[in-house]
Each structure stands twice: as C-alpha cells, then as structure tokens.
Image (cartoon, rainbow over all chains, first blue to last red):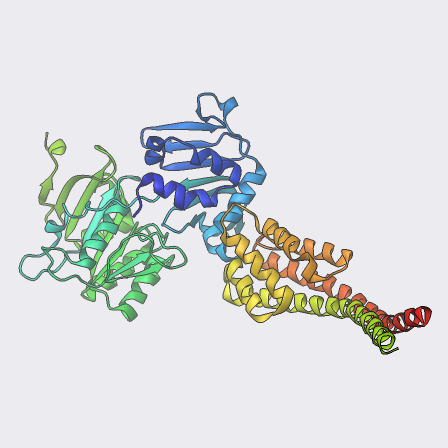
Length: 330
Length: 173
C-alpha cells in the first residue's frame, strides 16, 4: 500500500481533468498526506477534506475565500466521470445505480445527481452534479487486538462475531483486517483459514473490476458487488469457506442467510450500525439474531479516539464483558 | 534512338503509375469505410455482450481490422492509456490527426469520422448501441457514394495516366 501523498498523486490524479490535476499536484506534501476526500461540486469551489479540517483549492494552492477558489464546471464533472469510468460509462451501470465507482487502488468516487427511479428502485444517476473522491487507506493491525478474544482455546475455532458501531466507526476496516489476519494465519491461529468475503458495496476489499485492491489475505475469496444473502449461499455452495465475512446486516434475507451459514458449521463475522446493545435490539431484524444468541462475540467500536476505537468486547450468550477500554471503565 | 525509346517507356510507365495511384485512392476509400463499418459492428458486439472497457474494445478492434483503420483504433487506445486527462473524443481526434494521410479519405468522409469520436464513452449501453447504429447508417450512405465515385473514377484515372503518358511522349518526339 502506498503512503498518503503517493496514493493521491499516483492513483487519484490520473482521474482528474488536467485543470484540477495541476492544482492538486502542486499542493504541499504535508497536506497531501492527510487529505481524505476531494470534492467536486457543480458551480461550487473545489474542496479538500481531512479528519479535522477542510480547505478550498485555487490557482495559488489553498485559498481562504471561496471567490479565489477554483470553481467546478459541468464540463469538469463530465470529463472526470469519463476518466473515472475509463471512457466506458456503459460498463459501470451497476455502480452508477449504487451511486459510486471504485478506482484501482480501492479508492471510491461517490456520485451526486438526479436519481432516475424505475419501479421504486434507483436505476441510475443522471445529470451528475457532484463527485467525491474518497481515498482508501488500509489500516493494518486493528484486528490484532480483538483476535485473541475471537478464537476458542484448544480447537482454534473462530467465534461467530458481530461488530457494532455508529457510521464511520471503523467497522469495515476491522472486518478487512480480520479477513487478512484469519486468512494469512497469525500466531494464535496457527495456519490460516479459508475466508469468504461477501462485499456487497465493494467496501471491504475495495475491488476494481472484481479484483481486490486492499489486502484481505491469501486464502480469501471475494464476491464483489454481490447481494449479501445470495452471496452467503453462493459461498456455502461453491467456495467452501471456514469463515464468511460480510458487512452491514439489515434485511430479513440477510438474517436468514446468516442463520443458514451458522448452522452449516461456518463462522460468520459481520457488522451492524449502532452504538449500544439496547439500540440494536430495537431493530427487529438484528434482534432476532441476538435473541437466538447466534453471535458468540459482540465487538463495540466508536470514534471516541478516532475511527476504530475499541470500546468493549462482550460474550454473546450471557452478555459478559471480556474487554472494556479504559475510557469506558472510567 | 534507344535512349529516346527508353525515355518514352519511362514516361509512359510513370504516368500510368500516377493514374493507378490516383485510382487506388478511390478504391482505398471504399475499403476504409467498409473497415469502419466492421469496426462499429465489433464495438457493438463487445459492449453488448462483453462489457469490456473502451481501451480494451479498441485493442480488440485493432486486432481484427488490419490496415490504417486498425491503426487508428490502436493509436486512440494508446492516447487513452497515457492517462493525460484526454476525453475519448479528444483521443480520437488526436489519433485522426496523426493518421489523416494514411486514411486517404475525402473531406466529407473525414468530418464523418470526427463525428464518430462523439460516440465513444458517452452514455449508457443502450445510448452507445443506438449511436453506433446511427453512425453505421451514415457510414453506409458514405460507402454507397464512395463506391459510385470509385466506379466512376477508378478506370478513368488509369486510362488518363496511360493516355497522358502517351500524349507527352508524342509531343516530345
């Protein structure tokens, strides 16, 4: 994985129109290193975002006033869309329907515009009015802290695990790192295990044209852009994984597929949005899974000390805390 | 005397060769337009079934259509791979500019080819297919006209070359 500024220059700039590219390339290194998002909005200033701030970008680099910033035109957006789709918008219809396009390197471009709806479902976005380049940065090691709590002593079996956090809390990063650790095999596990990732929104593996761009381990198979419920069943039928990893359970079909997988002797690791056990128990779909104690470990994350802050690890059936962070304990 | 005969033969050959090359232009125009029609057919098949990316489609066309038309697609694909921020239309225009002489097309036919650049990379699959079909229709019309021109001019230029050469020799003698 390249470091921050290399990511931006080598992997993002080729997808920006020359006018905008030249502005980004001349930015100081320390700014390039921390940039997380580049925002292009029609008739509005070009903006950069990072965890603790934002900036307007103009001819002379970062500018203080919007009047001095580079204003994005319809032509800029059209050209950018052509560049990110590799001149092949027709090949990205499914991505356009989902509202994002993944770039090589696992970076993602979110689309804003007019949604064309057919039979109550978004068919595609037309008249694109905004593009958001989100830089993918793999954070390795987040799973190392929790993995010892997820492995059964003696047998080495991995417990069915549910990761819970509010949005931007680091769930996907944790799932990706767990996939990598379990697949490659780390000390506590001994040999690696076959992992199947059902990546409905291409966020876990950051796949580009089906090929994972982020490290998810050597024994990992990825079903990219595949609906979770269908993907889990496909995995069970044909790819014989020991562990299936998927994110954001929410639909009844997902729960049915998870239940099926659990009863097939496959370990499930998944995530849901939420900040506490009480909160997620109010969601009927998730509550059904918890009431049946399918998940043996519950991991709670927050953004208290930055995304991916580990708050607690709870034993699923009896609700016993296995780990509590110091900030939580205080 | 023998030098005169040799000179006369050379003049006639040169004039005939000129006539032949002029007639070849009309023949080649027909061939180019036929190749372009085939290219668009491959384009339609590739995006309809394969959903390949445009640079890959152009590579595939270049592998199947030889000669200057294949070269035109190769060059356009190269421009796209440079990642200099060119749109597909700009890559096509640059490539047309590079290959204009080899294409040997008339002004109107070149303008049609420039319009072809507006198809690439714009719209969804259905749009692309519709635009390619429309362009094929325009190319068929141009091909019909080019065939008429070829039939009219091909033999004429060859005879003109030969007769021109003989006339020059008679005048010189």
